[in-house]
Length: 189
Image (cartoon, rainbow, N blue to C red; front, side, top):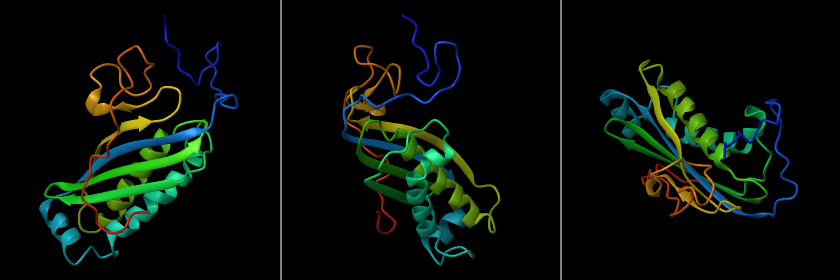
């Protein structure tokens, strides 16, 4: 059986998937990424901060706000009620690890919201530090896990086959989703 992209119709045209018949269920998605910066920027983030202000706080708010606005940025993404966002920014020796967990009770998952949260936080960090270092690099952005819905639970750490979005029986969803960054730089929402 050949699998098709879900956002293409039988003729290959893009369309928004109809989820109206799906059951509402609790759903969670986790995503992560890294903003690599040199040691002098790490020192600023751990110390007195960068000239624009509290880079981590601004990045956290930007990420949370972006998670709620994902359908405005990703054209075929369904608007879902985002019920909770946790965004951790962990300053490490080589940069900042970002981990987002997004929760909802809706008819479709929140993987795109979790990814958007991470990317917006990363972009904001780059903007906040560009005055002291223009070489900041965003890397390793990915979905780490999801739970809820018809396809159940999937975790990148437990999956050695197809990755997110695989159907049950193909080695896809199993295990538990856990965010990767454990350090918290201030309160999360």
